[in-house]
Length: 232
Image (cartoon, rainbow, N blue to C red; front, side, top):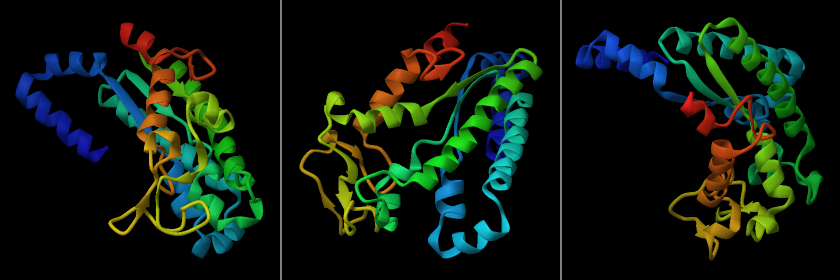
């Protein structure tokens, strides 16, 4: 946000305040945040046992939502009006979580997904709240969790052959223990894998997500898809 504030000043100096205001009001802003707060903080094996004893899931999620409210309001106050807010995907299904929780077997890990759903529920309420309270704002809630879960559950119908392992892998049953790097091995065809590395989807998966956010119904993105948002 600080970097964007600096960028705004540069744009105003370049084209003037009236043109800059019009530019910001008609531009599309996309915010994807939250997954790393769980994966690299609350759920990190080294610290999670201690932190989870000190901070309940509800308190942790509440703190994230409170901070996110401030940041989204700040973005609005800097001139943004059309804002897409993506929720947290099914992080219990990523190869990393599968490998560090072997007791889940072939299934996604339940607890991380429960945290994501708790967060997403409050995030959806936050988006509705901001749409009501910030005059002229047009926030859209992108349900990436729903889309990715659909892809994983029905991966073959989407043209994939693997929905649980990394295409780029070093170690682990699902290739999720070590990040993708120069020593990694690769799957024969990345377009057939849902996941590229221990954490991230492949381009093929991202293309499906993007298409559904652009033109999908309210189960994918609400209260309107990106194409409708741009047409406003």
